[in-house]
Length: 370
Ligand code: FEO
Image (cartoon, rainbow, N blue to C red; front, side, top):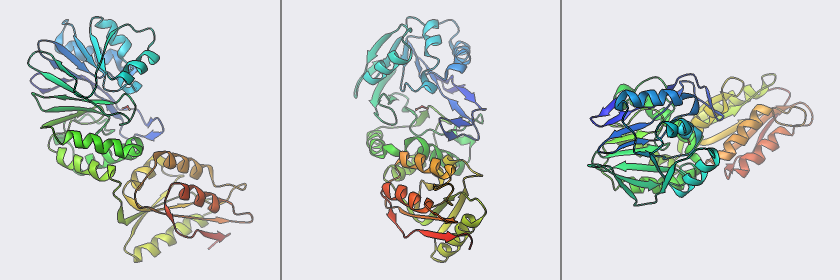
């Protein structure tokens, strides 16, 4: 699909994927790749391996039998590099451009694949005729190899995972999608993928602020044009650990309903204080949904009854996931839950929340029922 006269989207839609390394993707995703036609032809990023033939077909629908001269590999994670062996086989003379980490990681993932590699760093450029590409490494947004590429003459930032969204419903441009939904999906993505790397994201935003950007072409979801200022504002908030003092999320599971009743009572009490509490039952919603809702919430309440001297496994999985994503900012945590005799779960939940660095409210326990 043509984005501009010489800029084509040649990526694919994965409308069936529902779990993306532990992150629920209810509307699928895309693996975006971009073909830039100039005196020399450049492909930016690949797609996930099962879609390699579709990528090749998309490329050939644009350039026919012409060769590709350059591959720019912004990120090695296999959703963006899995098609590399097939595409390298089809275009054996193309030269791969990427960071030093990219070179190491590609060699590890695809040891049998032969290609010429050019290492690039901050300030490196590639001229393809009338176009100049400027490389902008963004290590740990969100892998060591991660990089953005800026096409100066068109004002296009190929941002890879940054500013992306898991939207696999077929829209190409942000004009085709409601702004609120777009920002919500970008928030889901940030909360579940990018959250641990706020400092690195802030550095990227500082670099990007010096560019004249008319389009952002991420590696997942829709191309950004009219939504760029709103998206950058959201990224500033999220990377700066903004939390909303009027929002709380209660994440819990329940055995016989007492912990659920406790969650409802907590909501009532905090509503009186002007705080909206969203309740999430982990038997009904995936923990990655909970993580999305937590992104901007100041208060995080987590409840579990005690089962066999422990918290419920659903709650344990959620806490492990959340702790790894390192939500920062001035957050407040609270543990709660019911028990019948030993009652260890609440102190266990309390310990994990405390280890996340949250200011802790006194835990609440209920014997049998409330
Ligand atoms: Fe979309 Fe980090 O891969």
